[in-house]
Length: 455
Image 1 (cartoon, rainbow, N blue to C red):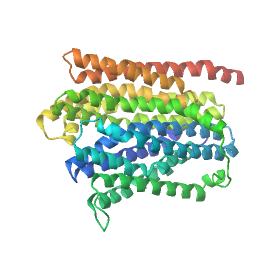
Image 2: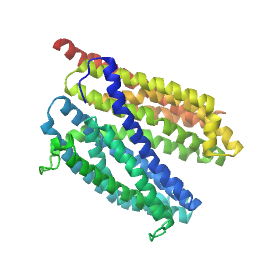
Image 3: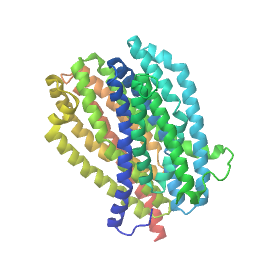
Image 4: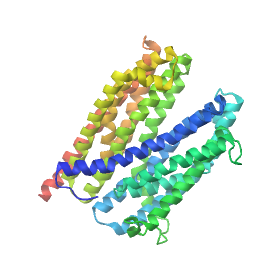
């Protein structure tokens, strides 16, 4: 990353960092997609088992990996402040913490997995596949969490193209091992949906090893000598990571788990409604990769400029990113409005489900605008290391406003299942307004006076 002196330079640098992040996020999204769809080609019950296991795992993983995202603003600010000698220590402490977290997840899961699945109304084979899929996935948890720390380090240097290449490499690896282990090809055991869990775990090990190799052999990463020195555990550094990371993790968890909760509550509706909701939600989640990627890019750029004490530049990056997100949301909204029937046709050919999915996609229009504000603003606030408000905003907007309002509208009005979407849209809008107000306040009260004093 370089210091920029004009909005045009900032826009160019932000896009150069953003595009690889976007491709990376789509790649990670696709890995889960291939697990589910390839299992579906084996048998419907394997599809159901993997889908259930995945729906339980994704909120947990995204929430916990969010804690490790704290490494990004920490390293970005150190780079901006030209304190490169402190980077290796921060990364290694993040790795120690990631390993402990992975071990705790495995231990806790071994205690609660069976009671959780037994409490669900599942067929015996579906429950078995979900259980064994999650067990298989657990063999890759340690490298997965470690990879998230190493990815945060690489991204914080602005080398997002490297993580993009690693992710794109992981996709064919994952698909090949899925094929071998789900269907029992080339002498591999035929494991059905459970095989996709082992395939994903193997993929996590491979991409982590590739990442370590790149960090140890390529510039600029070798300049930081990440693995050259043995560092003792530093609880003070863990405290710093957790202080920033825990609110990030909880805010991500609240965001991802709310949709799982809505899906559960919608089980009272007919199959066509549930299928339509899931299809529309899947496409809305795909579109969310755009503001999410902008959010991650802003964390890097804002953190870099704040570390260098160029607060005016950090502010400009925030607003450039927000404008890009809003423009893209408008474009995506237009696509949804004009082509919602064709988009619905990607998921189904059933006329009733097609019609309902198209109606749900109309509500997804309003998701776009709120996401275009709240996600980039969250990223900018993380760059400032201001994370507690984002945690509270996620809690309030999703769980205190969105879900209760959605339940009331779905249960006590003629809106039915659409009521849940209206509730979530209202919650998202409140969260977006709160976060935007916080960003403006931070820039005016905490950082603008510093800039004026410096001038």
